[in-house]
Length: 66
Image 1: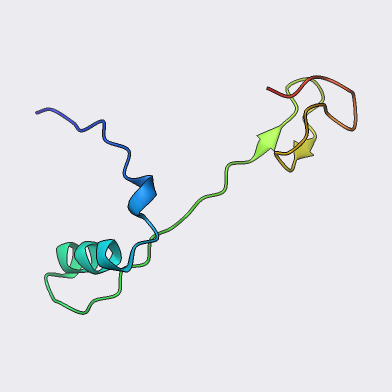
Image 2: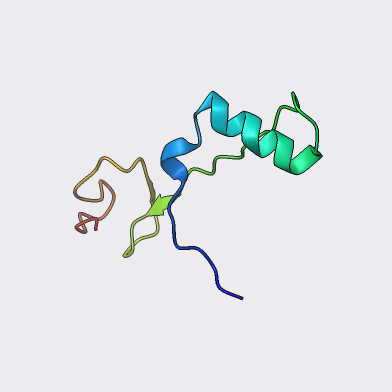
């Protein structure tokens, strides 16, 4: 069995894609699928402070954020 390596995240906000997923999950048209979107938590690798994701350097310890 082979898997797919396609990144479909660009379609996750599409109303058409939501309708397609809803029909696949339920077998019925009109089913509203809820697509969970997880926000990635970014932490400083040196001190562990949770960052917003826009920083270039950690405001706590000054370590460069990658």
